[in-house]
Length: 103
Image 1 (cartoon, helix red, strand yellow):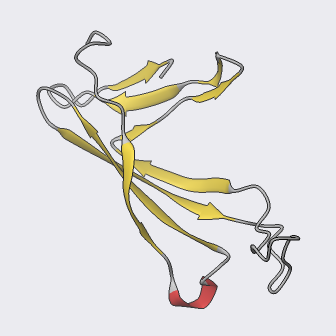
Image 2 (image 1 turned 90 degrees about the vertical axis):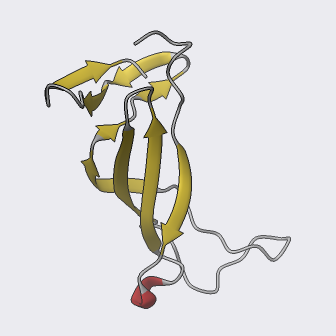
């Protein structure tokens, strides 16, 4: 699949468990391809979150997010300074093979 045919994913929805309103949630992601739609998900958590702690503008301080429990049909690569430091992957819809990518 060439870059012109590939449509990058974007988060469509975030579902947050009732117990952890500000501590995390679940990301559902879709990647559209010419053949099918791939569905991915992961759980986002903010381990440094402190309830009630706000910055000088009154915005809650959440800290950096940590993604875990990644699953579904694909996972995007982790890119730092334009270099893929962790490869992404997706399942080829026709063959079911797991294919590693730099995107």
